Image (tube, rainbow, N blue to C red):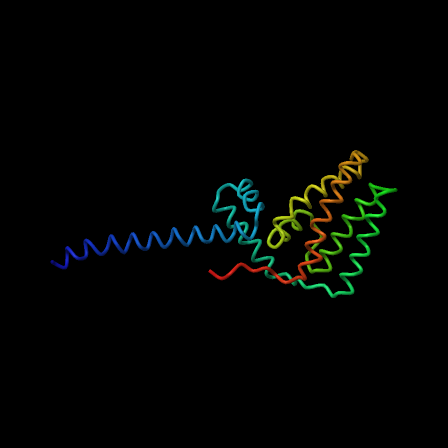
Length: 186
């Protein structure tokens, strides 16, 4: 067999192998992002101009998050937050709107204590999405009701739901000890 014939056979095989490896790498990267961000992956892609732009946004969130000093809570601090949450829940019986506002403040305080920036709600969502993407919808829903209640437009049932939603994120922030849940290296 001549050299030209061998090259005509080998080059296409190498090209196919390289293309298959690239496709496999892209699919693994996509799966890693989807696993890490949970429902936030699809939400971000829907809001982006393209899949690539959405995935770029998620990678930027990861990079920003990695630069934050997210820290575990001392057991005394964790116990204090648990007592504070109990007080907020008890407050709900007599003053549900106040309890929801206090729950929002308590969650924000806990985020700050852990090392998350808390100045801007949209940035909070982005920062939280890296490690808490599965509970982020709870935070959005609770925050929406909190805003409604500021105008005294929330029903008691909505306020009760907001407390449940705040509790989901509160428990996750309180219980994960600040240890980043890193995806396995690729």
